[in-house]
Image (tube, rainbow, N blue to C red; front, side, top):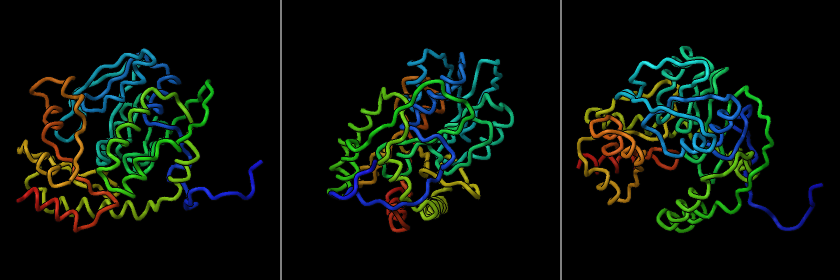
Length: 315
């Protein structure tokens, strides 16, 4: 029985979920663990160019994995044939590879696993295990969505998130730098978490987002950056008609550009430093880690911020 009266909770808009038919869990890596536990794969092919947290469920469950390379189109650079007890995991890089995902899904079928953690708006494909995360696109503490027809034979309790929101509040009240340490601390706290259902707090926060406005802003900003930077960008990643990107990946020969941007308080992340430990010196993946500036072009910003970044890059 719900209480009536008393003090107010945080006021949040009561909208709709963008993924109402998905299984709402606590983290993307736990969506992957759910898939591995239910499917019983012996071995999975995974890209060299991926975040180290992807390995967490493999180590936890004792599932084997083999790395594969990608090319400059961010597509699989090897011929991979699967046995019945194997699968292939592919990342929909930066929300820009949906057409390729659909092509590979037709080829590999149910043995294809789509990591859409960088492609929140990408449509799931029927019969293909697909997972998303919320934190890379929106100001929430955790949360993920999973599309699968695999039924879990294990209990899943609900997560709580009230103690993970300090970095969000600090950024809002005090600025980006003030919440940076909290952000990293909260990210560490997600390591080793069991599979749980999405918390009530995150679920309500996700229902309060204007998804159409976010998508429009991201596309406008990406197009503006691409219009001005495409000629010098060593990656050629055109924006498909329905793609909603996470960042603008700008691959440059200037190894000092990333630090130059950071010095100007333009905080560009590195995806993913762990790749330097996994790959060889001449591998493309190492170049992507070292020289790609992932320019923020999300819903918080407009053309003015895009021009500021362009001026730093071209200055």
